[in-house]
Amino acid sequence: MFYKLITECGHMGAGNSFERVWFIKGSNPLAVLQRAKRLPRVKRKETSLAVKLIQEISREEYLSGINNQTMCYQ
Image 1 (cartoon, helix red, strand yellow):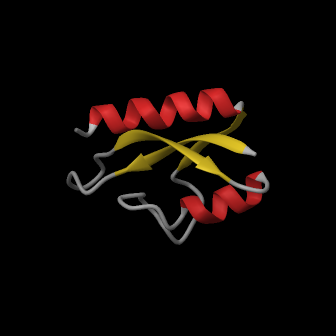
Image 2 (cartoon, rainbow, N blue to C red; image 1 turned 45 degrees about the vertical axis):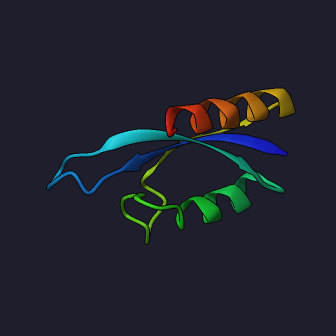
């Protein structure tokens, strides 16, 4: 299964953050949530408060999202 995940990320000073979109493979939403807590820059790693959205998506959306992310960081 494929998921789109939006998390609150930080290290921009006290109380400041930005949202980041991740595309993750996982067996179920709970497994994705556990994995999200270990992603880089995610705020409040000891809780699940930084996770704003977990949405199941199609394989095509997943591949498109991964490709778009790769292009943004080059």
